[in-house]
Image: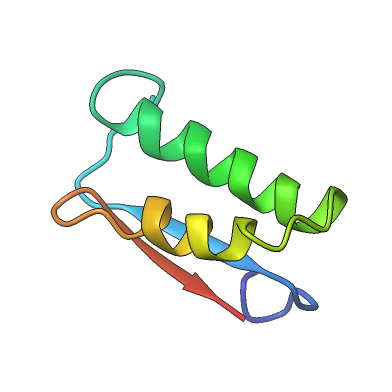
Length: 67
């Protein structure tokens, strides 16, 4: 789906994440990246893309791919 979706697209991969990610330690990554993406796309917040890059790339927890 990521490859077929028109940009802007962001894919956060949770490393070793369970099916239910709304618990520690993944809930913070999921919440922050969702808010960052929505701020960027709906509010045109110029700081949101940089926040998304930071929040979506957490060593040992998550990686972010976007286009």
